Image (cartoon, rainbow, N blue to C red; front, side):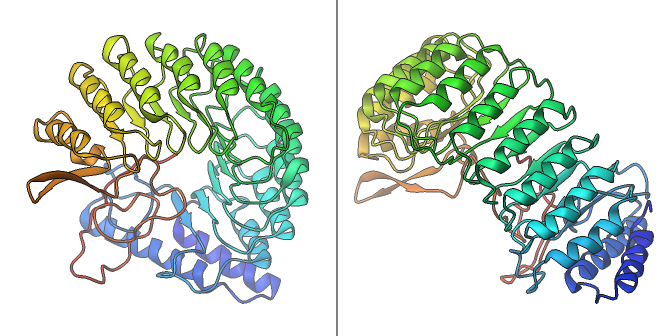
Length: 445
């Protein structure tokens, strides 16, 4: 099965074999893919607004498909994918070479359905991306999926976000990371991991040489001694593969931040560091600023929703103004930073030519700070697309308003019309007027 027609035919045959009615959502997405294929032939190749992944425009032939079946898109369906549908999908895709990416987020898949997903992972040779975000998969389902990873040689990205697999599920994934040599991105955020599974994953990553991105946001931690932060910090000192790590809602304090900064001084590969929604204050940021001064590989730094205040912002500004030439994106939203700290960051951007994106909304945006960032925007140093504020003048006073520009976009949902539709999202009809045909290609984690 190397095209949409044979894939759709196989799905009909499987439903007949199982004595089950075909799911209307799956049928609809197959029909959209057929329409996309016809349009490609008529236009001589290229992409159209169907929500599929970008394919080479050199030929009319399309050799892969992103099967989008997210349950939170009410423009496409009012009926979500359930466990019996997973069996039909497994039998349809087990020997399929056309569908290389599968999005099943926000459906009603439980441990029973996860068994069939695991069989698909184990037997497929073409599936590279799988999104199971926010289903109802528990520890048993996680065990099946993790065991399937022991044999899989194609999957590169797996998202388990929001599935409450707990400590047992986390331990199974730690075991899988010991053996699997193809997985490059793993998202286990909001899965109720506890201290044992977090430490197990960090220990395995001492020797794992393939994982490049890891999201372990919001674990369930009952200790205030920050053991998990220390374990990950020591791992990052020697790991040479990880490029992106998310420690959001990690209950990290200044002690953990200090240990992390000490070890990041020896890391030359990490480019994306997410420390948002923690309890880091100016003292911890003072240690992190030393990492920035050393000019390590970090290009994206998310410190949103911490407790930096003016002193913490000044520490970062001093590092950026003097020695750092690698950081490109900085997030300091909602950190109780006043004019003094925000003006210091604005001044740092005058001498630092590398930092292009900065997000400051949620702080004390008084007039001196508003004027400073208004000048950056007016002078062309800061693009409106690269920040979350915009200046305006009322009654002779300069103010800042919020823009809907964020560092992490389209993680849980995405727009279906306009010029901001990611490549994996099917395009819907613009209810407010005309719509464009070609979509903007956005890179997301």
